[in-house]
Amino acid sequence: MSADERVIRALPKVVLHDHLDGGVRPATVLEIADEIGHELPVDGADRTAEGLATWFRQSADSGSLERYLETFAHTVGVMQTASALRRVARESVLDLARDGVVYAESRYAPEQHLEAGLTLDRVVEEVDAGFREGEEEAAAEGHPIVVRGLLTAMRHAAKSREIAELAVRYRDRGVAGFDIAGAEAGHPPSRHLDAFEYLRRENAHFTIHAGEAFGLPSIWEALQWCGADRLGHGVRIVDDIGFGGGTVTDDPLGANAAVLQDPSQLRLGRLAAYVRDTRVPLEMCPHSNVQTGAAPSIAAHPITLLTRLRYRVTLNTDNRLMSDTSMTKEMHALVTEAGWDLADLRWVTTNAMKSAFLPFDERLELIEGTIKPAYATAAPA
Ligand SMILES: O=c1[nH]cnc2c1ncn2[C@H]1C[C@H](O)[C@@H](CO)O1
Ligand SMILES: [Zn+2]
Image 1 (cartoon, helix red, strand yellow):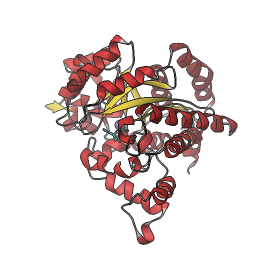
Image 2 (tube, rainbow, N blue to C red):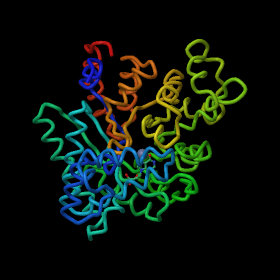
Image 3 (cartoon, rainbow, N blue to C red):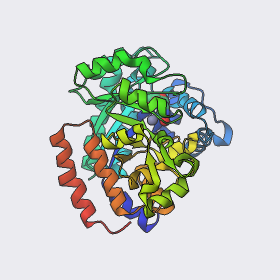
Image 4 (cartoon, rainbow, N blue to C red):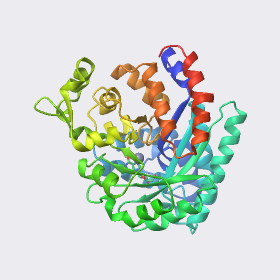
């Protein structure tokens, strides 16, 4: 780890978009698979934690969201029992806390964990118990962290209303909100309007994966039909930002350079302007987007341009296992490959804390009591 990386690791971080089933330790996948007889895609000399970690990263590196999502069969497959769910939740909190994360929203789809006979309620209770154990152990290690769950419904399935009701039922027991995820093309969020309308009537919070593998119509539906509080990814909003003879999407590096010299060279379309004007939080996940082909590289990832244009940008991991990443790695890559500095890191961290589905007073306490003082004394990244 370089000196810069050490400085970054010590900074307080906030992650709003981290999938529980996308951050399982490889050694844990291996151990539980052996216990329950789940068949893994590695064998022989590759049947080790390192071999499995490599398999996940390489298989996720295909340039397609659909193929990326196929790898989850081997994490979801080992997360079917009470003890496995509790263990994975606990370990994920410890891993985040050791990386300097002080507030995390961890999401998972309860409907995917029913194969061994658990009920939806039991799944949520076991995961929450794991989160609380993790919080206690992390605090004892000197890494205090606050963790909340987000319940995801899979967009190709028909359980969203049921999962929305589950999220409301557990809102005072560790669950902060709701999400929909899964393959985006062909599965518009407006199919789940019933769930979103129910959540709005209940004054509940939700985010929607939109504008990742599919473009502006998906973002527009998520905001204007469904009423999402935040966008998961939202990276394709740059399709609605004009630059030169086309859009930022055609020339992201040129647009990055241009915005530093003269931001008026960029023309915001109606939707891009709406997202900025109304401060819609964007849960951006650079490494995941490079893997699924939603962005060409870290240097050319729209997160830099959108930060310069002062969108409400947040930085996230998405899937630590599949992307072999962490908050420290995401931050470090932006510093070394996209010209970010400490002020940018503080900006996205504060943005994330402001956008969390946590009560206002608790958000404020973390910003004033933890985030601001630490960045004020940190050495430059
Ligand atoms: O980046 C993503 N886009 C859409 N769906 C995703 C992404 N990462 C994970 N998922 C899916 C696969 C998981 O099984 C599910 C719940 O965490 O969410
Ligand atoms: Zn995601």
